[in-house]
Length: 301
Image 1 (cartoon, rainbow, N blue to C red):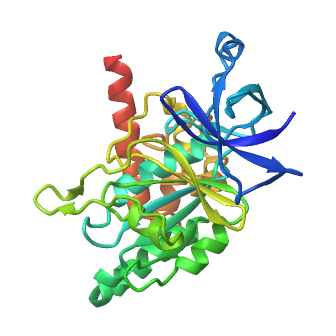
Image 2: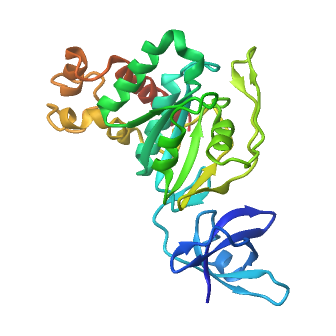
């Protein structure tokens, strides 16, 4: 029975790229498949990114027969077997939003994925490169990988292409930061629709409509996802928040009180680290903001 990977799900169909000896046959056309009813009854509907076994039918289409074990599963966007989350934030137009970047990082840390931060539109900040370098240094010090790119000049594109080879990645971030433009540069001829920035609103128009894996060569696939500028914490417990700030960990384990919230308790080693400059003040301020937001939501629900 042939095996494949679902690269797109649309209107009840699954578009499957065949696997040959475990490697995606990029040169072959995708097979249009339906899913067996038994999969839905088991509550295991196929997702984009799933590796599956399928059978070919008489009309040249196929039927998804079995889902192979998943390495990971995301709820939003609904995609399986993602290895890397690529968070794109622009240097300008729209302006850098570290609050939103930290909120994305909380969700990605909670999901357990590896993270790559990509700062886009570097060409718009030639007179303000210090600010970009400071942001890059801040997050690299925490332990995140950061690549600075410009779709206009092409800088950073080859480094990013090499980083994405051989894995499934999910692109996300603030609307209007140039996700589609960057993907068009990574994959010549892709022709993704791009949206101009609304200067009045300070955010981009949403141009992406569904989740789809795009072959970027080198065995790499990227899931481009709908742009959005808001996230909520409903799926995350407030007691889990501090663990999503990775630089807190070496200090939190030495706090005076077990289960320390790092907000008001005496003998809090995290607060001491903030006061000494070992933890960035901006990160701690966002932690407190998210903590209070989660407490407020918990009271309302």
